[in-house]
Image 1 (cartoon, helix red, strand yellow):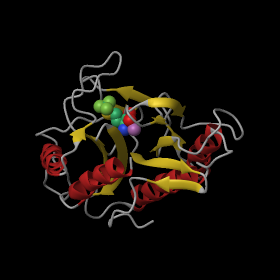
Image 2 (cartoon, helix red, strand yellow):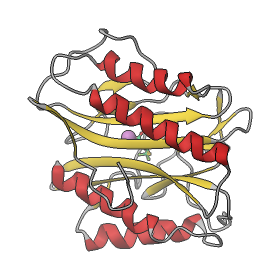
Image 3 (cartoon, protein in one colour):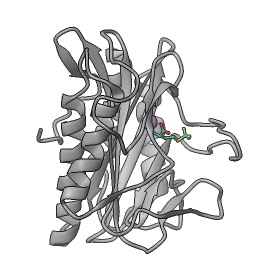
Image 4 (cartoon, helix red, strand yellow):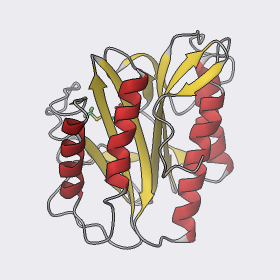
Length: 248
Ligand code: MF3
Ligand code: CO
């Protein structure tokens, strides 16, 4: 799983190096496809089916500004200075999946947007620190909610992180809200894809006409960070970590 995690991280890294004002989100999809094939990996998203959705048509999800998650890359969507873009990439290697996401600034962004990125990433790392044997999944989820809400932001509901392994989505769900000491007990060998999805405004979201895109109802900015994390006897190991562009 470390190999699939590192492959998923390399896809994000190639995209990070491509993002700049004037580029379309479809060009990022092309970079993703090229990188996945160079890595001899397989996209976990392309043609993925979840209930009540058409098959997912791309290898990445791109979430610009008020899009929270599941934005489909588009030839008409041009990035501009000041945007933020969440990119979600998951691949499998030898039958095991790795899943990660990061929200990148496009050129210079506002102070408020930067604070949203910082808080969302902090919430993910606070949650990861709780992913250790003896804790429960509610300890992880609590941090996602608490760090975001303390900063005056809100977490989205009805979408969550997940266990990951031979399938992209496995038990347990890792909700964005939780109570410490509640939920499934975490044991060595479990692997979780922990997802921090934070809105600058209210938590309410809507689904776009393509059946996939999730956007904030109030039009506020939203940020998304995700890592695949193994629970080892001595604590969490981030399988999708170590990329040069991530300064944690
Ligand atoms: N990281 C998201 C998730 O695990 C992305 C899903 S996109 C899909 O739910 F195409 F795979 F559904
Ligand atoms: Co995921």
